[in-house]
Amino acid sequence: MNSKYEIGFIITPEANEEEVKKIIESITGTIKKAKGTIAGVDEWGRKKMAYPIKKNVEGYFVFVQAEVDGSVIADLERRLKQMEKVLRYITLRLDDKLKKANKLTKRWQKIEQFRKKSQYSHEEGKENSDSAGKEEEAYADEK
Amino acid sequence: MQTRNSSPEGKPQKKYYSVRKKYCAFCKDKVTLVDYKNFRNLENYISETGRMFPARVSGTCAYHQKQLAKAIKRARQMALIKFSEEKRGY
Image (cartoon, rainbow over all chains, first blue to last red; front, side, top):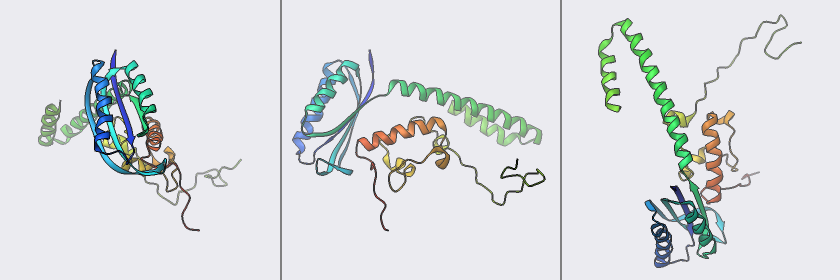
């Protein structure tokens, strides 16, 4: 079963560009080998960290979004731990969180519908049908 | 028994101050997932020494406060925001 994951890691500033490329390619390569798909690679580049790690003030931040099997992620974590050039890493599963988020958006939509309905009934009493009609059109477009 | 908000006759006293109602900033912007990566936003919810603000101070709802707490912890782990810092001055 493939599910959505996010992997973030910090590479030491001592590493040159080739070494950074190698590390990123090795991670994306293993994901592709396991029939996973990569949604995107965020490279923030060199950034000052909030606190020094192993006496390094700066770090090279990379975030990878991918859709793979869980066993591959466990393997990746083991490998990231062994890499000396990687200062920190984090892996997150996003599937269950996105489900919760979808629930919330549905709830908000319901609330909005209810609000608009109550607005119309209020405005009809005042005979302001023009503004209400415009809003209705806008809402239809959104849907 | 006398409570703080009641006069000796038992009638509630008038409040001298008006409190602006707090609201959840995440609900207002319709944020469904609090991301640990946009640490600039998370910095608004920690004190200058690095402690999280409780929901009662910041006004965030329970749903978002739970996510916010986890996001701040993750951001700390990834060195995006500080763990703690001593107060300057004094």
